Amino acid sequence: MSKQQHLSERGFTVIELVFVVLLAVGASFLAFQQINSLKTANDNAQRKTAINSMYYALEEVYYKNHGSYPQNLKPSTLPSVDPELFTDPDGFTLGKEIVSEDELQKLADTGDASDDVATRLSAAMSGKGPNYHYEATDCDNAGNCKKYKLRADLTGEAEYIKSSRDHK
Image (cartoon, rainbow, N blue to C red; front, side, top):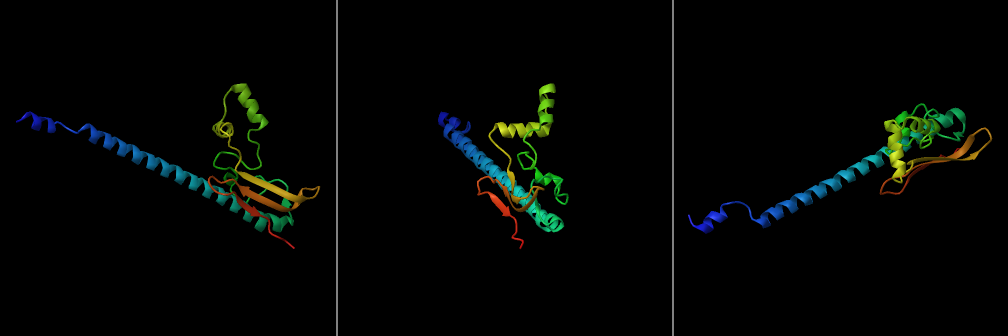
């Protein structure tokens, strides 16, 4: 066997190896982008579902029973809505402070936070805030309101808004 034949049978060339590595890196990058895109779409769909559930409960249940809308919105206000829907994908709950005084005190005393508190603190420290917002307007002293806006901050899209119906 000649020396040239012996070298060509030893394996891959450097160019072939670089090409395969670059191809693998490119495929990994595309897969990562798709996974992030799917997660964002899923989170936005979750936000829209939650806002729609709250909206229909406000209109079809709360308003029909009270003749007005609540000044503040929290899970106990709309018992017909799954309480988990009030918590956005970043862990913030509508009608609840980012971190309550009790949670802060426990964190200060023990130096330990529950997974829920840790998630919210991490999101807040990275610049995120609550995704769900309820704004009641035209309220009387008893907390009965004539209008509201319910909205969700979406990722990569305009905010999702549901407003009260015009009851005349």
